[in-house]
Image 1 (cartoon, one colour):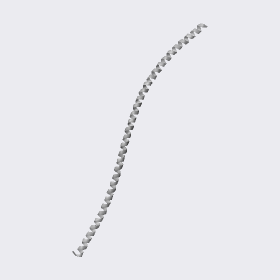
Image 2 (cartoon, helix red, strand yellow; image 1 turned 90 degrees about the horizontal axis):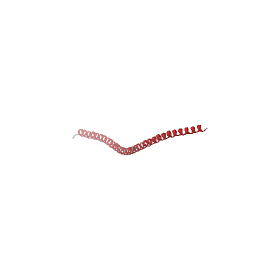
Image 3 (cartoon, helix red, strand yellow; image 1 turned 135 degrees about the vertical axis):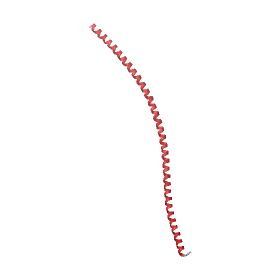
Length: 123
């Protein structure tokens, strides 16, 4: 090999080495970005898992709340029925009281007539 060929070969090897170094640096940069992306993905997955756990707890709480609300509505329904029945009884009692008051008024009017009639005849 003559010195010129050797020089070209050395130059070629140096250029290849330089290109290899550049390619290696780019590969390391890409690898760093991939690792960062993987870490970000892992954090996102952890956040998602926590969110799913929170959602499950919220759904359980909602289920309990709905059960409590259903029981309260049922109790209110029973109370409303009882109140309606009590109102009906009260209405009946008031009706009977009004009838008795009317009867008492009629008897009082008759008594007043008797008393007035006796006074008028006695004087």
